[in-house]
Length: 69
Image 1 (cartoon, helix red, strand yellow):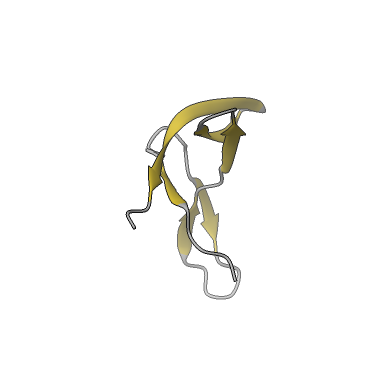
Image 2 (cartoon, rainbow, N blue to C red; image 1 turned 60 degrees about the vertical axis):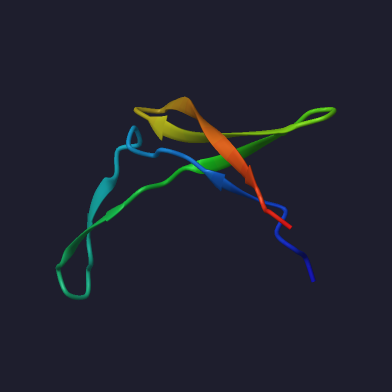
């Protein structure tokens, strides 16, 4: 099994949620869609989030938080 090496955190307040309606009960809900980008360098790991806004990809930094042993 795999162990957790780190956690990626990001502020997604810039990502606009989609307003959707549940076809079964008619209730409205919101969905936020984004990708987590991991950049592997020689000595460090960096992270970003990416999302589409009007067909254009936008990116924002994310933080890599390492687990304490």
